[in-house]
Length: 40
Image 1 (cartoon, helix red, strand yellow):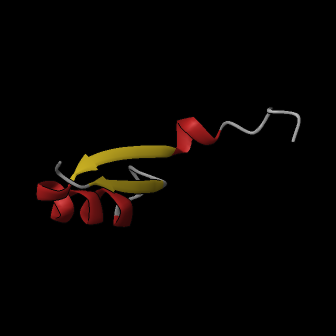
Image 2: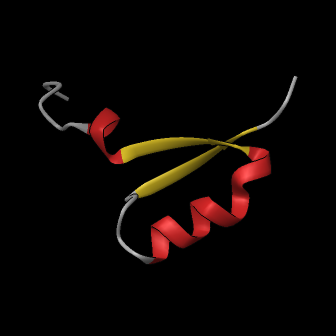
């Protein structure tokens, strides 16, 4: 609530086409929270 938790540093955005890379990096510990972006 005080804004001290670094949420933005834990999120990694990926385009939907890179779903396999997002899953692999999450499993390997390279990404804490992968977020897929849908195309417009």
